[in-house]
Length: 299
Image (cartoon, rainbow, N blue to C red; front, side, top):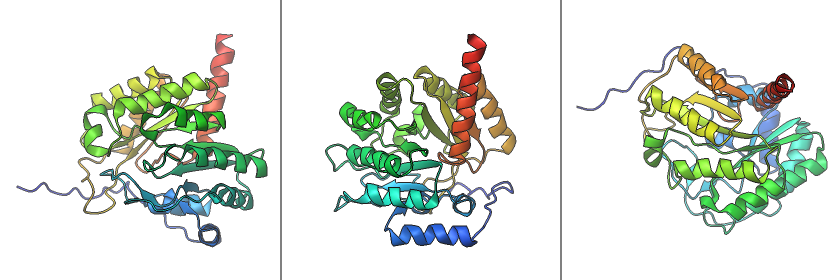
């Protein structure tokens, strides 16, 4: 018998706000031929974030060389590399007068460095125009290439973000080509290269994981000294993607936030509509103040 689709619960509510700020951001992205993960991945928070003049830039085009079963980004073989993209991202960030800028990308397994050089160039271009803007990068795994990671870390992002996405048992089924242990190794290497740069990762719930497996994933992240964790509900973007196995309640998300904080993360953002870059600037401030409190308490 076919598995019954679960109806969306009441707490999965998307706030539709399409005022002047939303239109300004949309028009700016079009005029500079830029992509955002907000649109390409069908993020449920796009209306709220764009209304607040925040967006996550997606560099290296809009075609991903992988086909993860949870992700709505187009897949295929990219045909070009835009070397002017970093400057256009920086121009848009300057026009938005951002204080915190998040930059992510599609996976570009077709490129020798996986796109690491474009990430580094984007960080540098934003810093040149907005010296007081913090820059967070959400990177792919670069197929485990340590030198590609080093290129990004040498550009000194303010936060290095790489998502494990799900628990270890489900990783091969949910993610294309990515490996759970390889993702943990990337986060560990990032800390070894630049110990002072905070690292961050994300888990989505509702694809068949068990509660204890979520806690184990938290422990695995803390074992590689990951600082910030975001936890959100998986929402099926199209009928061709993975089905939602379970909707977690706001109370369960609150309990997981508590579990994460007990384990020593400097910040945990946990809720049904939370995504990796949701309230990213607030995450940075919270994590920084908690770390400073930890230092002053131990000194």
